[in-house]
Length: 141
Image 1 (tube, one colour):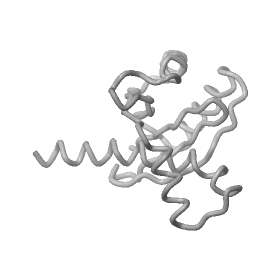
Image 2: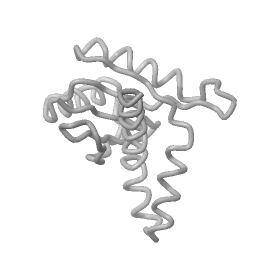
Image 3: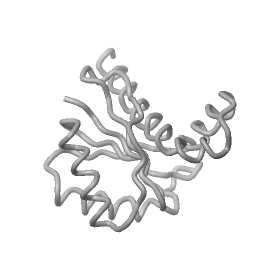
Image 4: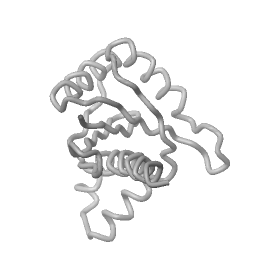
């Protein structure tokens, strides 16, 4: 089974999915947010399409570890999603994932217009890959 990762923003949701062995994360799409109901509907369809067994959602934290501004909105989204799906949903610290994604795209000399289109997807990849790497490290210790 696969694991799906999300970078939830105010305007978009970046989506990444693991490979079947749950070793690597691949960016899949960016959902343009419309309403909570429609966003949940789109996410639920992706969960079914990719046969996902777990969801990982980035939770924004400040550098001091306190929850960031979007955290309440993300927790509300998770609560709504839990009503619709019967798979575990975990959060991971997403500090600096968008900044890392942007830096990667800058280093690759991706144009500003193109960066805006893919940054959320790449942030979702970073969130999911961080989770996957931690699982491998847990299993090796």
